[in-house]
Structures are given as structure tokens and as C-alpha cells.
Amino acid sequence: MAMKMRAAYYEAFGSADQIKVGELEVPELKEGEVLVRIKAAAVNPVDSAVREGHLKQFLPINFPAIPGWDVAGVVEDRGFSARRFAVGDEVYAYARRPLVQHGTFAEYIALPESYLARKPQNLSFEETAGIPLVGLTAYQSLFDAGNLQAGQTVLILGASGGIGTLGIQLAKNCGATVIGVASQKNHAFMQELGAHHTIDYNGQDVGEAVKAIAPDGVDLIFDAASGETLTQSLKALKPDGKLVSILNQGQDLDKNLNFQYVFVEPNSAELDILCELAEAGKLKVHVSQTYPLDQAAEAMRQIETHHTKGKIVIVP
Ligand SMILES: NC(=O)c1ccc[n+]([C@@H]2O[C@H](COP(=O)([O-])OP(=O)(O)OC[C@H]3O[C@@H](n4cnc5c(N)ncnc54)[C@H](OP(=O)(O)O)[C@@H]3O)[C@@H](O)[C@H]2O)c1
Image 1 (tube, protein in one colour):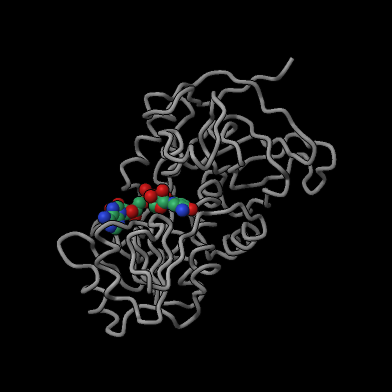
Image 2: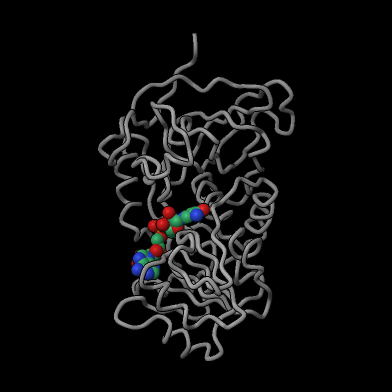
């Protein structure tokens, strides 16, 4: 008989009210996969978008579906040919699969071992769980798409949440000057993370505020906020600068803009880089709140405010 585990899940698209917590079968371990006992799972805005059905055109789903794509945990078992990690190893991963069904708001998940990386030794499981999705997104946006270089200036829109807090640190660490945009109450927080300048998106034109700091404009805009904040910011992009957005897919943008949309991909080699940075003390994760599995719906309601500071994490 299949082993059972506790999990948060939903059986139809809808609001956080759809979330139930109960017993489901532990996912079957297939060839090349590793069974991970989940110690912590971070919550991301996309978990709510998937639950609401906004991604169903791109990502097929099997109900009951367990939300959650971020995991830190311990290797419990290995499928045939999975030999990169030993039972007992502490690992972390960005766990998005082509089919939405087995997420990380649960006690166990089976993942291809190629998704996994070694957990940073100096971080807790809760802090570690806060890295994969936002860390990979920031890394792929700033460096793979944005080609950010030392000496350049980057403007990060939405710089106090999950993406921004990792983005500020990665950009600063590469030698860039960082301008972070978020509400006033988070400015000291962004400066502690390494932002050289901070701008409030309330009560002023963000682009004019950026030009007062960088009169020649910025080399890169990393957009994790979009809307009016992005529209205002574009006037502060250098003529040869680049816009990388993780929200705007370009339909309403000037076609002459050097623009790229990024949708984060699993990449364990990049997780290894993020692990090294964390172990060198160059990447910290601010966990603003943890929730037990029973409060998974509450955690999802918090992320839906779009004003989470750092990361929130579910501990099953
Ligand atoms: N394409 C992809 O691969 C990808 C990957 C990850 C995330 N995303 C998307 O990127 C967005 C950010 O993700 P996240 O995890 O960082 O979210 P989050 O943790 O909820 O953070 C939201 C951030 O946006 C700021 N913000 C809210 N309204 C703003 C406005 N009008 N102007 C500027 N900043 C504003 C908040 O600052 P205050 O609290 O100070 O207002 C906070 O810093 C989400 O919509 C998410 O779905 C896309």
C-alpha cells in the first residue's frame, strides 16, 4: 500500500478558500528521481496564480494539486540510477515540473535528481527554501538576460519582496550600483541588503526620481512590479540600456526597446552558484514569517497582498 503524507491541496481552481489540508499518497519514486522529506517550502505569488487557473494554458494540472515550487529538505530515498545524492543529504530545489500536481506544501516530494543542489550549510532550512524560485529568477534576469556588469547601474522595481531582496544582493555583489524601488517603509531594509539608492513608488514619478540619482540613466531595469512604476521608469533607461521583465511580456511596449521577458527555469548549476554565494556570506534570506502546513491558505493570502517583505515559508 502506498505511504501517506500530510499535504495542502486543491481540487478545483479558485481562491485560497479552495485549499484543504489532509492526507494524500506520497508521490511514487521513478527512475532517476529522489524522494525529498520537505523541511521548508517558500511561498511565491505564482502559487496563487496557478491555483487561480491563470497558467492553465501553459501548465497542465492534475487534481488534487499540491501548491508550492520551492523546497529545502533531506534526501529520504533514491530511485534506480539516482546516485548524485546520498540518503540523508540536505538539498534544495526549484521544483516546477511540466505537470502541476506534486508541489512542496507537503511532507514529501519526488524530483529528478538533476533539479537538486546541495543546501547552503550556513543557512536554516527556512532560509534555504526562500532561495530557489526568486534566486534563480533574479540570477537569470540580471545575468543571463540582462548581462549586468560591474560598474553598471541597475534599477530594480519591486525591490523589497522575494525577487528584489535576492536581486539587490546579486547585483551589488557583481559590482553594480543598485537603485531599489519599493514603499518608504522598506527603504532601510533595502539599504541593509545593499541598495545604494532607494525610491518610493508612491507620490512621485519614479523615472524622474531615478534621473535625479543617475542623470545619464540606468543600464538595466529589472522589472518585478510593472504597471505605472514600469511606465514611469522607462524614461530613465539609457538609449542602449535593456529592460528585463518577469511580468510584462512586451505586448504594450515600444518595439524599439531592448527588451526580454524571463520565465524562470529550473537550473541546479545556478543553484550551486547561489549556494556558494550564501556560504560566502554574500546572500542572505529574510524570512518575515513562517506558517505551519495547516495555515497554507493563510500563507497564500499573505503572498497575494503583493507587499510581503523578503520571504514567507511553510514548515510542514
Ligand atoms: N516570470 C517569472 O519567472 C517570475 C518569477 C518570480 C516572480 N514573478 C512575479 O514577479 C512579481 C514579484 O515577485 P515577488 O516574489 O518578489 O513578490 P513579493 O514577494 O510579493 O514582492 C512584491 C514586491 O513588489 C513591491 N511593490 C508592490 N507594489 C508596487 C508598485 N506599485 N511599484 C513598485 N513596487 C511595488 C513590494 O514593495 P512594498 O511592499 O514596499 O510595496 C514588494 O517589494 C510577482 O508578480 C511574481 O508573480 C515572475
